[in-house]
Length: 478
Image (cartoon, rainbow, N blue to C red; front, side, top):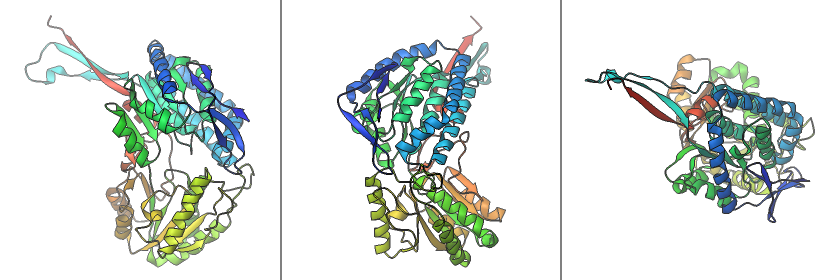
């Protein structure tokens, strides 16, 4: 069993009150973390202010070196970190190794951005009557940034917040999910080992109601970057006051499959199912709602069911496992309740639908799902896909836009006019053409419209939001 700790200014802080972290597959104890409180969060912010002063003394090249070194250390420890990810999250070992690889890339991209942070000349004499003034603007770091990170990609999504923050010269206080804090502590230690001031990288563990709330309310924190649910995002913004925010919130990603995909349905069905069932559906851009042209609906369902039946559900450490558990029993309870609600309202389960243990749920496809049940309106965050018939691309766009979310969406079509119409009219931050909305690379601008959030991730885009513009003007007339 791993005994975790908070990391404040490089000091390992333990407490009498502890939270158990469970292996989602069989609910055995992986380790413990301190149950932090308001005082811990406030102390971490005080230390981070000193860390910000030290970051200000580092050159851009030194920040680049530290992030590059951290990426190499993380890469060298890939298997160790991946094993810990599997224990905490329940994702398969292959999925965990994939996340470590992405995290290495995110840190590397962030390192490069440290050398690209720049301003430009301002033409003051472009205003009437102004002569003899020259100047420019530069981007300067904000200060202390609060990073509140989720359970599903605790390593890479923490890197997406911390990497750009440190590249810009900020300091951070990280509040990881109480389900997946151990791997975040390891990441913080790697960043300090790589050369960042210990005061600049702090981790406070505990529950959001205490630690997260204190971090959000602290006026010394200049930005909150959060990944999580819409209700919590709204609470954060209502309590945080006048500071910057980045909110990566919910989704129930939609896909339209056009009639001209009839010869590609094996490929499309597999892509769609993988997009809905990867990591047991616990991905913000998991495929959840699929709208299939009526002329190919039955054939698509046949192929999707056949592929789904080939997937193995079980122990994520078994190399043959395709789908592991959801994060905890409470999540599994909710997912099963939503499935039952949809069936009671007239939906039909064509594959799956059974609960195999407290946290294992069969990959499930439902058809003819009413538009007012939770599986259609909300984010299921589980291995469940809804498939409904539509008449044409216009109908598909209308159904996809019924959502209050707008993170990413996808279309499969051979018709470029339909693809462009879809791209123009679907309300989402990312449109994937002949690709599932689950596709993401770490350098792209990632974020959503409507209730899917505010701001964009991706190091080159996040770093702009983690800096302020400062204007400098010289009067050469004096």
